[in-house]
Length: 388
Ligand code: AMP
Image (cartoon, rainbow, N blue to C red):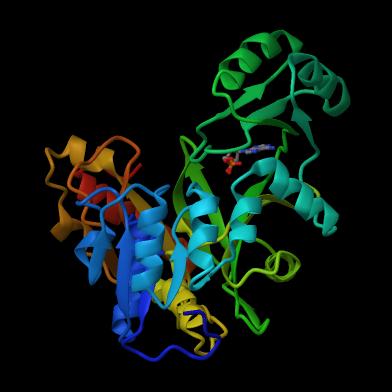
């Protein structure tokens, strides 16, 4: 039954999606005395190992949503590509945070960009692409290079192509339009840095934002988060306020991760939103006095949120499947942990694959340079490699 009062420890948080984000949320919820139930079709999913109960059903199943709503006092989701109608169905029974409306907006790049524009928030110039003629017209309007993206189901660089000139339009259009989803094309932004900020907002409208992180991607996958970013404080303060503004304008209850480009002119352009914990916020587990997962659990059960403070310079590096592949499934964890200030987080995934996020390492140090150095060394040891 829907209720706006605080949920007592012992109540149950339902999570749609049993990946690493669901797992770390469940661990934080359990630490606070809450029960968790996860909906995931994979019996071996990372969250399944730590929750009180798993519903092993497809995400789009109405029966599964109903079962989750019946077992939960409040529900969230750990990724955007869930069926918004099933989430809306569950939300008729219990509160779902963030709301199905926020989910609908953020699971479609065009809807997301249009909502941001309407809210007065700067984004890279973009056009909707419904035909190859519109893509040629966008090329004239936006000039080259441009980035063509599928409006849905793209992540970690999948479903996007850079178009350098008009000759490349035919092939790019053919390759992405064949996926049968809406398309968007954006002006290519020669950014000097990518950063993100994660804002938490409660049902009565209180907001707090985690210190922004500088994000370095490799092969389109987040490789390293550096906190604080190597930017003037005035700019990171601006990023924090921008994330808060997004949370308010979209009426988010829960977490919203706001990914931004920092342009050469120090302008902030919002690239993408995620209405959930985010890989770039993993540093908060140890780097801050509250993690993004505990903050979300607090919002969900109606407990006060805390204003996250960075305890010291922190760096997070992802551990991808290739580390396992290159070490015959036996990374050198003793080597990785032989440095001060290093914490290992593994997600319990049985099958390593190239590019698959298997875990991460967080490093706290006195200076950002030390944290970066140790993070690289620690991961290289796990990989049994020399430092890159
Ligand atoms: P996205 O899936 O939109 O988060 O894009 C993945 C990555 O592609 C981003 O983190 C950027 O590194 C790059 N990218 C996406 N859009 C643009 C753009 N308009 N200009 C330059 N780089 C982009």
